[in-house]
Image 1 (tube, rainbow, N blue to C red):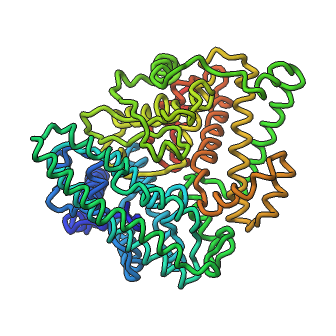
Image 2: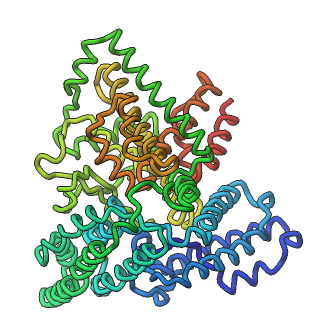
Length: 587
């Protein structure tokens, strides 16, 4: 929820620790100071943002976090001065971080060091002066207007104080959104505006038209009821929350609509980032941030085209050797026998036992999606739990009639992606095995997390009682589509494709040309939104193929999975190092 994600500046206490130069410190002192650095970074981050602290920690005091230092708000506000303040903070942080000698740290600390350095380098790149007005906060898929409803509907209320806090958060919606709208207007002035105004308006109107009858309020009232407060007290809080919703949330969404309608279409870039002065360079930053890949964009393009070619070859091979299966697959004849989400989760919990390390019994709930989200076509999502949480973890699934085909292969793989052995499983495993609270919460490399969840989507197909050629076709078809979407993203934002270029690409690759205008609009207004999934998946597949080729019959799938899970959220070079260590130990 922060306007511009940044790493916190060191406290005075830690700065004093680091006044000693690295050359005057013993390895043991270096290690101790580094642990203090990371712990301080964790505490400072938690104390600087209410939502981060609330989501990740049930008992902040157990981690040295002083809740009295935390302002209850949705995040920092935009100001022109904030850009330089961020750069100054990063410069000070880099100066302190540079005092550590990586070679003096323990192997586990070196992994943390590499992750931190990658985050710091990315932050410096993204905060260069030339990119000051390039960030987008109203992407049609992940913009603030789409995030706030989910935030409030799903926010965990653990006690009465949380209810008081969420009322303050609701009251903060309008000033917070206004700050972002000020930024949008500044983008218009600086020639960097790029937003699908019609789509944003349409999305916001869903909430303004619902008014006080919004399922957002219904969900929040249910969270209050679950606390079993005295009825008159609970009703008082509900009245305050409704008042805040009516006077802050709904007007904020009308403000978004009014601002979007008032923007000058002539100053709004309706093509890719490459159409902006520094857009191509900014896309390179977004690409690295989204994927965590050490490959260049050109190298990834080769991987993607190769993936499309392999997929086509697989499909042609099945067609030539087993045309009956091919025709049945095209007709949608292959499906699972599952009739509900719980049955899928139960099946996967047992099926993965030989391939993934054990995590024990896990408490979770499968909750129906918010009505307005369900109607948007979302199949499911996993709600991030507190690392010291005592309540069951939550997966939200689409139970709306007609929105999800329960027996479709895609429904099964989506449950695997969000649940087991995907996000839920990964979270449980890493909370048990990662060395410190910082590693469990602060790093956010989406290429790793979404790439892993997409990787397991493909793997779990092996557990179904399906014809092997049908499984091959499902994987090939999915890979082909994923690679095509990723190439379109690169084409639009890096190479500057217009709609005609996209339609030519579609024609050359057997895609539905008539669908391209809608696809262009979606990807144009959401740069790199899909790359975390699709490029991240290819990175994991590359690591898998490398380990298998190196080890042959010594390759062990569970040990491989332990290696890729051991790093936690990280750039792929760090994950590759872990896989290399596994290869060396198993050879």
